[in-house]
Image 1 (spheres, rainbow, N blue to C red):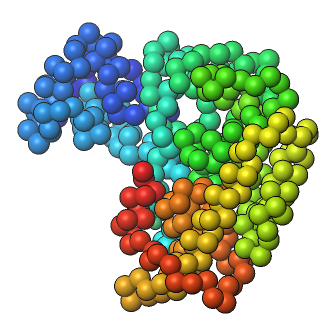
Image 2: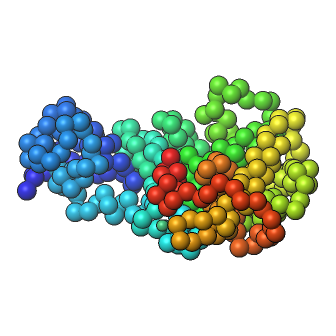
Image 3: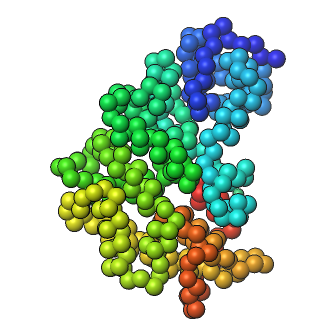
Amino acid sequence: MIRALPVTVRPVDGETSESYFQRLASVNSVPAESLWGYLRQLHAGLPVKRNAELATTELEHLGGLPSAWFSLNRQHHLLPIRCPHTRWQFAICPTCSCLPAETSGCVRCAHGKATRVTTRTGPICLHHKRWHHESSDIDIAEMPSHLAAEKAFRGTLTNRGISLATGELTLANQLAHAWSSTEPISTEEDGTRFFLLFPATVKLAIALTDPEFVELLLNPHWSPSEHATLLSMTITAVLGHPERSDSGVLWKTVNHHASAVTVAYGMVGTRRRSRNCTMERAFFTAAYTHRACLLRHLDARHMPKISNPGQGRRAPSAQRLAMLQRA
Ligand SMILES: [Zn+2]
Ligand SMILES: [Zn+2]
């Protein structure tokens, strides 16, 4: 039995085991390498190169935490996913669901210390009303639209499998930038741009990933100009003003997703072991193989059947799809 260290700290919600390991070593004034070496003496199975993920039970003992703290916290923050086990509806799948990408946590929640977290939240701590994305610490108590956006992010976007690092948010941010009524923000200032446009980005991401909207945007019977008009009108309605200038991102989005739809239709019916590839599997797979994130939000059962889609690339195996989802 490993005894708790003389000084312990509480992990913040969603804190990674490596972040907690480093904080424990720091508050006890022990070099992280020495603490890892100590754990390896007790458990020879641990690798030479530090990997705190493999030592969560030992960490819980060192920090005096309840048993299984890390695994329970992990389950709490898994993102919903569409997969064969969830009948292609967004839900938590014990096999396929992943944690959101790692980001920096709220400094105030950790009593002034830097932390790394994987949580089903946005870049804002609602308790302290601070923007904490990428190691920043900005007071947003007087910015109600940011606070409302954070609540919408947690309430709607995470239920659609979206985190700070998924493509939907990047796409919504690019479109919000193209529609921004302010002066163009330099591309060198991605962090600033993300901060300023966060409320617009969340609103757009919610609209763009609405299943009924995606169904129209990806309808193969519509022309590219009809798709572009629909997308432009939707963004203008959500943000309340027209595009600032012709940025090209609108057409790029339309064309890229249209070609992914073609790829998906080509997969339907191709042989996959003993079964034929279904519409659901084809569209979900094309979202990853073609990096067309809006396809993830499509209910393929509502897509029109195409009489002669032309046999295309075979759908990848379940293992390959799982790898693509984690990439
Ligand atoms: Zn699954
Ligand atoms: Zn906080």
